[in-house]
Image 1 (cartoon, rainbow, N blue to C red):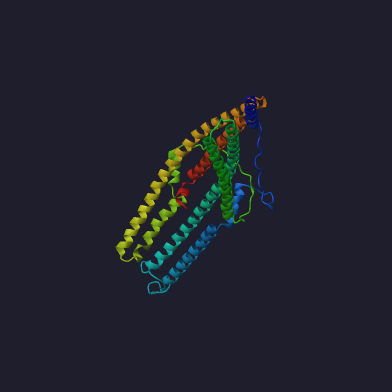
Image 2: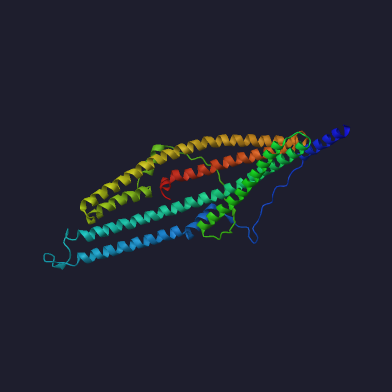
Amino acid sequence: MRRVVVTILITLAMTFGFAFVSFASEEEQNLPGQDYVELSLEEAINNALKNSYNIQQAELDVDRAEEVRDNAWDNHGYMMGKTWVDTQQAYMTAPGTDDNSLFQALSADRAAHIQKKSFEITQDAIRMQVTQGYYDILKKINDIETAKLALEVAERGYKVAKMQKQVGMATETTIQAKNAELEGAKSTLESAQSNLENAYRTLNKMMGKDNNFRPQLATSIEFEKMEIPSLDAAIIKAMNPTQNPYLWSKKEGYELQKYTWTSTQPEEAGKIDIDKASLTYDEARVETRNKMNELNETLKTLEASYVSAQEALTAAELNQKNAQALYDNGMITKDDVVNSQLAVAQAESALLDIKINYGLSKINFEKPWLAFVS
């Protein structure tokens, strides 16, 4: 009987003694042959603007539209000088006798201007996509650190449960549950690492870089509250075609249709096309107004969430500091410290999510047309 009691006491000592042993976290894996390179968000955007296939295609579309426009005006000039007019004693086309070539020239001119605006929209879309990709990498890096702490917590829980089972303080069901938590934590870490690799590949593709390019991202994500003195004024600005290239292109599309309806057969179909273009422009205006109101509400919600997330992080950091102090004085186990560290990491992750969403929402509010382009 005395031998059994001694065995139990020794096992319990091992169980709780284990809790004071810290686990070494995994070291960061560096790709062989990779030099340390810093990359700012601005540099990433500039790289993408220089190397993006979408940008190159858009530039070619502008060049093509300008060639068509120049040819249309040249053709109109030729048509204007092809007929001998007695009253003018010159070869020309009298006003109204060559509306077709004039309409074609005016149509091509508007189409070229629309293409230039489309190019501007494409540039803005690339900037937004790169910003999202850049922020996504920072988020994925944070996810890995959180997953590592969660794995350490799961490893400790599993090992403690196995020791407790040896002295009859835990059941096989408990062991299986802890093992499931451990496997889940391993899977989460592997997924986080894979997601980071995919995020790097996505950004590298936009920048025209090699898949193995792994720069150190130098631009952090800060929360800077957006001041909106007047929502009505912001909406008016957003709905002004001269301030919104998306609405401008829709408006010009409507104007362009006025020049081309006469070439549509039957003629009534051309008139219907004008009505359709007008409806498209009206719809774009309604969508813009709705999007501005929606983004304003999103910004307000995120601002309130940011304050709450900051308070949660402060509380988690204080708890972690207290836990470390108690552990140093032998009053709690290492498990308690690691759990408090995980709580801090989770609070930081929640705060980072809000910062990212707020930053992207600010960009969309300033350039609402980004919500309507792919």
